[in-house]
Image (spheres, rainbow, N blue to C red):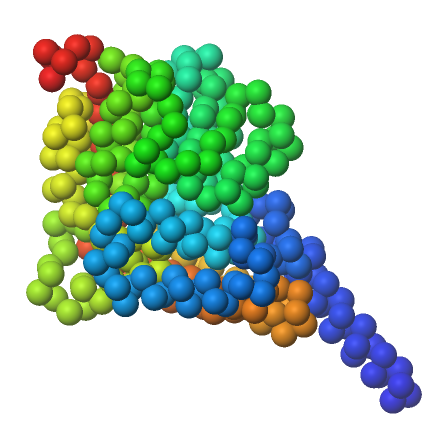
Length: 360
C-alpha cells in the first residue's frame, strides 16, 4: 500500500512538472518551452557572469551614456532576457492598452497594426522596423499591410529567432531581419517608404542619434511613427518614490536614462522631421496597459518555480533564476509607474520627412 501511495505521489509530481514545463509553457505563445531556456548567444556556463556584468554597467553610469558602450550593454541584456520574454510574455516585447472583450494577443496585434496604418504604406512598400526583437510586430504588420518589412536588432540571437519565426509563419518573403546597431544602420540614404519603432529607441543613449539615422534612410515625404518610453507631466524629480520607480524601470530594462515626454517632438524637429501628430496612447479612454503585469503575478510564481527547478537540475543555465527575479521586480516598478501616471511606454509621435530640404 505504501509503495502504491509513493508511486502515485511520484507520478503526480512528475505529471505536474511536465504540465508546468512542457504543456502550459509560455503565457501567450507556444514558440518557446521552459526546458529550452538559454542565455541567447551567451554560452550556458557564462550566463551568471554576464548577468553580473550587466549590473556592473549601473556602477559606471557614465559608460552607459556613450554610444560606444550602449550596444554591448543592450546586447547583453537581450541575450539574458529574450528566451524568458518569449516564454512568459510572447513574441512581441512591448505593452498595449487593454481592450474590453479582447485577449492580450489581440490587443497587442491591434496596437501594432495601428502603427503601420499611421504611416500609410501600401502593399509592396519597403518599411523599416527599428529595434525588431524576435519579430512579433514585424509579422503582424507584414500580414496586415503586405508591405515588405526590414527589421534591425543589435542582438544576433534575436535575428536567428526572428528568421525562424518568420519562416514558420510563412512570412519570410515579406520579412527580412538584419543584425546591426540602429545608431549606425547599414542601409542607403532614402531607401525606405516608411518606418516605425515600438518601445525600442528608449535604448539609445541619445535620441537625436537614432532619429537622425531614421531620417537619413527614409525617402522624402515618408512617415515615421514611434511609441516611446517617457516620464509624463506627473513625474516629479524631487519625489523620492517617483525617482525609485523610474530608476527601477531603467535598471531592469537596459535603459541609459528615461526621457521626458517634452523631449520627443523637440528631438524629432531637431533632426529635420515635421511633426504630424503626438499623443500618449495610454491616456483615457485607453484602458490600463499595466493590467497584464498585475494579472501575471500568479504566472510569475509558477514560472519562477519552474525556472528554479530547471536551474537546480542543470537544464536551465545558472543565473536564469537571477534574471527572472530581476524581471519580476522590474514589472512591479512598471506597474507602479503606470498606476501613478508618471510613466508611459506608448507616447506616440508621428513624423514626416519633408519632400525637400527647403520645406523643413
